[in-house]
Image (cartoon, rainbow, N blue to C red; front, side, top):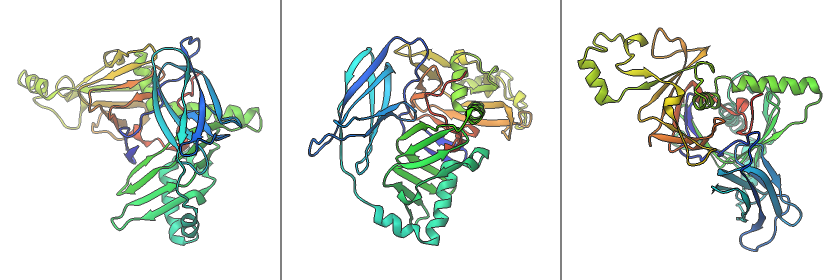
Length: 375
């Protein structure tokens, strides 16, 4: 992902395909083994999971695994094992049933000694604070998040001003605001001029609450994190309930039509500070039903727009380009004209999808796994 504090680019990630819905009967069961690609040795207790989710398992003592009740469609699989390079592989199944998938892992390069030497310096500590801020965010939930194993980070400052980081093993992020332990294989981190990019596999694991009160508190915070999120926006588009979910979306008018509308009198006296003077000339309000098309499978939908989408979160105050729309503002661009999403609001195949503005402010402190479900 690549974003300025308010810009997020999905072009590098193929996000997890779908969420498991109640009553779904067309499911896939994955079975197989995890082995060393050079020796063929079976790797016991390796993590096999769907990226960006809490759906996963570990291999048994014979290196075998089983993952059941997965939806058909795209599955962004990930595998991790200490001392080996993490695997990320997108699979697509259009028919239900039992599937065999074998994962072969390559041993990684040991970098621990470099990390330990850097960690002792004050310079490393300052750089670590920047990495922490950019990964966790600065919102209220960030105060309840902590990186538990900073020693696995290798951080360097390039001569050109780029702050780079990698992890030699999964970064453990404890989120006691939402009730998750997050394991992040940080393959890339690049921070430069307030722009941050990071890549790698993400696994969520539910924390065990100390009591029922803490469990309910986590659930309440998860609902807060969901409000105004990209996940909620996409769900509102699929269900054609944008206003009910607190969003107002405008589709930019193509340049060719914009010129025709201007000639017909629309926008002739356009005020750059009022959205009303741009309606029907530069932008049109659009319903979710106009943007969503059926996908190849029942578990997929297409988000279609040949022009940019301007999104307002009506439940959140913020700055926008229009004086009479004082709400949190985001801009969505679909370079290929479409993206594949799930009915539950997760990006399946981004096709270069870019999200800028308020919706791009998500960090690990308020990030929900793809299989999180509303009440």
